[in-house]
Image (cartoon, rainbow, N blue to C red; front, side, top):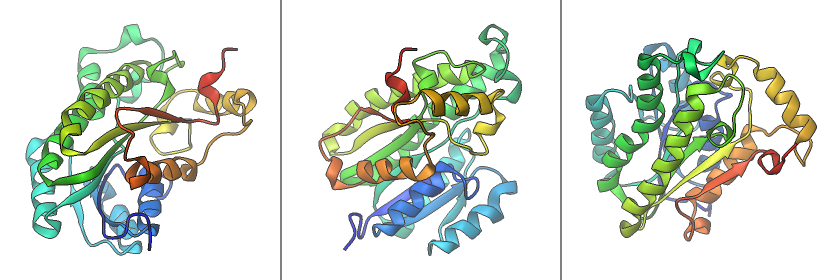
Length: 255
């Protein structure tokens, strides 16, 4: 019997087979969890549906996380189908492409608001709807990055958003703790995903991590999904409000 046998997991953020969210979904499924998925735009619908069907899931729902009514519909559907929810995966972030190059000084007001709404407030909005469904030993997991703590060239407003996301994890951990639900973040090193490739100079970031990280390699989606499995399972029942680094140790380095 798997670590998550009989558990229900709702996953936001799958875009394609290279998505970290997809690697996490497969890891949860392999340990017995039943998974449901959302997709952000119609352009992604068929792709996400095909991936979901490959792991036996027939719950695939549209959800623009900037629209409260769509979030409410997702959780209403999950309640009708499952009644309860054990795991929520939030792998959602967005900034306009023009904000991910040059200087933070050049960030537009609109660009800042979009990045914070999609990348930070969405975790609050999803947790609010998930809370009534989640049981003792439930787990909420989000994805962050070192750019929240250190200056990474061209990461700009997304670094500010990820810093906000990490603070949000701590506050939500306090809010959800009394009902036995844990809230944690994984700070993943750079991985070749659809979202990451939109960051100017991303290839140079990968090269530097490979050269300087203690393990002398970049991470894989599976490195992240293994830690997500730990956080989703009873093995992490005493862990909440934490930012866990999965970056080959790069975050510990000075020069």
